[in-house]
Length: 144
Image (cartoon, rainbow, N blue to C red; front, side):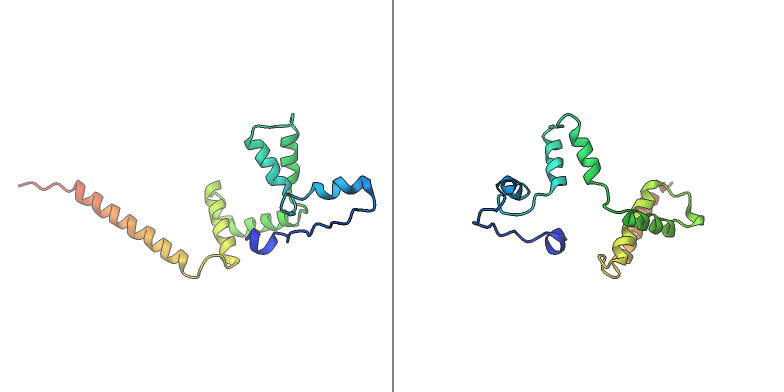
């Protein structure tokens, strides 16, 4: 999804020197070796994998970079959650709500093929029936 929709195209590097020499290093600072913009969040995550905390700066950078740019998405997510968890379903556990909201979100956005959930649920039911049948056969005792 990133590659297809969001990844910016490579920036052509100019051979012409910038007019302001003090900004020359800054112009190249945010591009990688292929001329692509550096993903700051990915870089900080790589630093964490290397156990390089930069004396607490790592956690601050991850907190700041992982925050949404606006609260619109957060409000939309809470609204979506409110619509998913009705007053009659308010005692669901966290895992159920998370899974359900994820499936609903993907389904609404056309990421799940039509009928795929029905097939999956049918397979789950068939497996459960098969296990119950096997269990019942194992517990059946015949007396001569």
